[in-house]
Length: 170
Image (tube, rainbow, N blue to C red; front, top):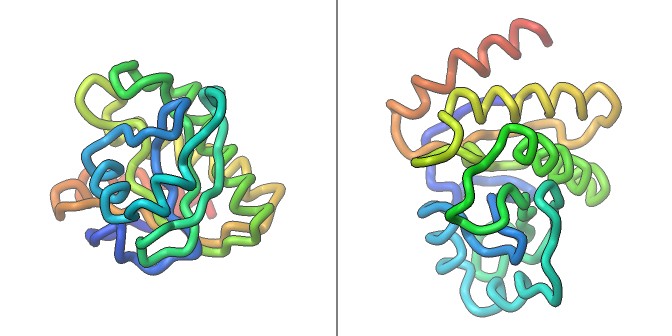
């Protein structure tokens, strides 16, 4: 099941939160930067990498001071200034879903990955995420539930039609 809700991503109940990241696990959006700050020093320490990751990778870390115990970092771009591509987003989201399956996470919460100024339009990004989830879910039972957390009712209204199309196919 996929749904869109207006909520605070840092407080939304889930087994893990998925955040967009760079190849060095740096935050890429204002939302992910806020969560990084709220996660505190332990969260920052968990995100340190000794070498660059590939765009399309996903890594599980502890959540630090966040309300969720785990965070899956989906590597969607080299630096926060690089444009996000649908191909890179798809690979990163599939990797995040595979990590969720391996760690037996039932419920994920995530912002719309890869959208924002200079990146993919939110509707396109959520369509990539939904298509990849359908592909993953056809072969793996977990995660069972994806909650796309947005900050405004306007954002929810934009994304709800794409999510409704998926529900009609389920």
